[in-house]
Image (cartoon, rainbow, N blue to C red; front, side, top):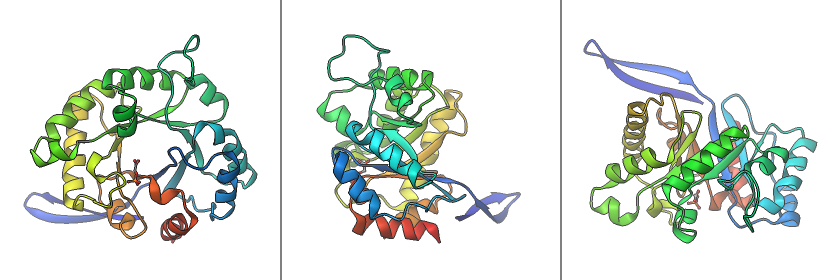
Length: 261
Ligand code: PGA
């Protein structure tokens, strides 16, 4: 992707073009169990990663090993990620999966603090930070999700909410931050690209305040084939996190082919 980057220097409006590898993170959520995951991947043209885009597929735990092997068999450079991990190293945590287990399976990334986990599992930002630290100890790059609710958005409290979430949940600059407005997830509603750009700049400035510079910030929430190019075209957008559109061949293949051009 060639990105147009406009800025003002000494009163001149300057337009620069540059290319940047964008992260295309596919969050399958609680879909595509073991058998279905392979059937799905067999219908996807996976040789699509190139210098412009890096695909990261995040299946449910039970499909991780199969999907990881399938990616390798196809000699695809898609990377593997998980959707959560424990904040503990090991021990008496019934039902939990540790970062070390994910590392052993070949995961390189882990999504943490997704709004569905914050909502349905009451995960708070402090727990998310502990999970991110544990992930980093095991060579996993945490994808830390933040985002305001519709109510906060309507009250003009987006920046306030994001600042608190970032402060409490991002432990280091080795993370990817995913900006996912809760009201845009699975709803078909997407902020204007100018709004995304502004919010990403805000996130970048907050992270810089904490001493974390050059953190990759991806956008998530109703990303589809018809809006992905415009969203990825924003200079502050380092990638996208795709949910619903990443689990069906008829919505995923158009995304893959758009990005392969
Ligand atoms: P969506 O989900 O693409 O279905 O809106 C995004 C996400 O929750 O990560």
